[in-house]
Image 1 (tube, rainbow, N blue to C red):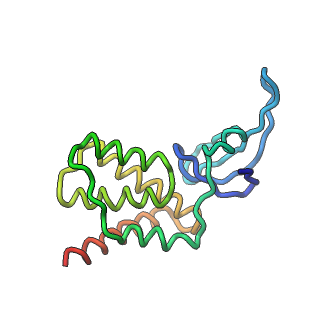
Image 2: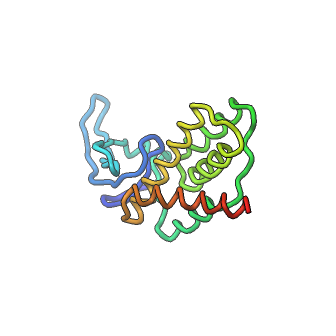
Image 3: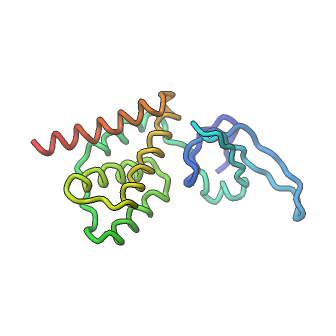
Length: 167
């Protein structure tokens, strides 16, 4: 997929950002083109080879019209996670690595629910925080809201779901 300057994108490792330029660099094996991405809310600029971006290392951020779907996922019924921590962490890690908003919402929802009924390991807690942070940053990027606002919105959505199902 070809991106243009101004596109809002998500890097699976670094999170959401905006393409601020496309640069060509002369290297030993020829000229290479790079997308220059400023990562939202960070003092970080990432250069992604155009060729690698075309292979799926970067994706467009969700559209603003899909934000209600993300919130609906957060308010939905959780899927039980494996009791075995190794299996659970492997499953959660795979979902996080996709970097996709709906998968991040599932991670946040399911780990939050799991925390209410069982103990979260230190790694589970780190995965939950990572999922919340990435999801809040992407939602903030596309909505224009502050990250702390979208973080509170995520927390409120999951809490409302827990209150509704518990009653």
